[in-house]
Structure formats: C-alpha cells, structure tokens
Length: 262
Image 1 (cartoon, one colour):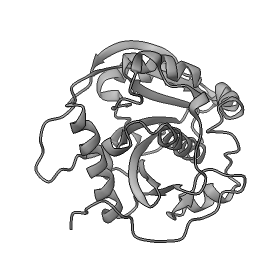
Image 2 (cartoon, helix red, strand yellow):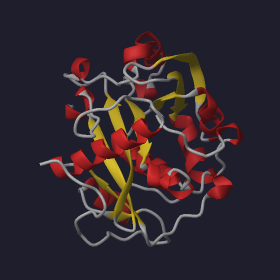
Image 3 (cartoon, rainbow, N blue to C red):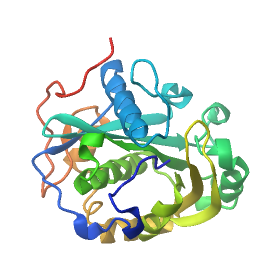
Image 4 (tube, helix red, strand yellow):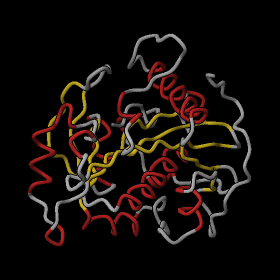
C-alpha cells in the first residue's frame, strides 16, 4: 500500500528522469531485529502522521498484525547513515501449508479480486506465488527526495526476486496510479477505503511477464540480480549500498538520527 505523497506536486506524477541516486550514501537493511523494527515503525508513524493519514499514537510508532508474520520482510533506507524511509514486502504462497494464516494485507479489501486473479494463473502448472508492496513511507525530512523513493522500489525488486513471485499486488492511491502504470502495473479494481488509514486505494498488479521489461527500462531496477553482492548482503540482514556499478556491503554501524524504543 503506497501510503504517502511521493512528490510535492502529485498532479505531475513522479518521473524516472529524476533518478539521481548518490551511490555512496543510499543504503538498505532488513529490519530483522526489534531495534530496527522499532525504527521502521517510527518512520511509518512520522510519515503517515505528517499527512494526517493516522491520528496521534502514544510512543510515536505504527505497526500492525502483519508485521509479526513470517511472510513479511520490512526494510529501511538510510541516507548518510540516517533512517529515511521504509518498505514492507508480504508474500502469499497458496501452496504453502500455512498460507491461510499468511495472507496479503490488501486481501482485507480486495480478497475476492486477488484470489480470482491468482486462480487464473498457472505458471508451469503450479499455483502462483504473490507478493505485495506495502508500507512505503518516507520521513518528513526527506519528503522531496526522489532518490529515496527509487531506493524503496529497488529494495522491493530484490525482495520480489527473493520470493520468486509470479504476480505483485499493490493497493495504490488514485493519483499515484499513472506512476505505477509506467512501472508495469495495471489497475484491477477501483479505489476503496483502506482500513485504519484516512485514504482510499485501488488494486493494481504487475505480472511476471512484465518483470524483465521493468528491470530493463527502469533505471532504479537495472542490474538487480539474485547473484549480486547487494542481494546477498541484504537477504543476510547486512547494511548494503543500493546503487553503483558494483554494489558493496556497507560497514556495520548503528543508525543515527532516530530514537529507538527499548
């Protein structure tokens, strides 16, 4: 679910022409422990609260029941060592024995539509695996930083590769749909109220046959592979540099600029 404003002028959308990442300062790390999870939840709260998508919450943190499920991976983007944004990827595999307890968050509002879409897919004769991009949030301090948005989608790309997904869903706000179409998504359903947040989202999806085009044509996805150093370090829980000709694993260090909850 894309829950924040990507640009200062939403009517103009966001363009990949703005892709100017600084390869030395944009890094990512999975929130595998409580300390990093708390940082991600604080980023969510600050981002959503800055646009009045949620009300005041004690402790300045926002998480939900999906965060505790094993089929979710949350990642944090760091700029110059400071936590700047976060994204969550949820995986749903109907062939898994516990798939009934590990649904996609978007199924709360588009359950029938997602199930019907997946039922129509039979990649190599098997049941499809789905992923959902959600909880994309920037710190208000980086509200106009385009490179951080592209970093979030690059992380999503790596995690979708890791999941070996056949289809990627997202619950998307109306004025962001043109951007997602440029990224290879298509609209499946009109917007509906998103539970617990003050906006509506429509259902969009990107299917495996479009993945290669996205990787070839979107600068922020070019070069991602399950064989590169960035992928290996990210999945291992290390801090990694996201962009550059040869992504390197970043030095381990404590994040700056963000309080943590014990």
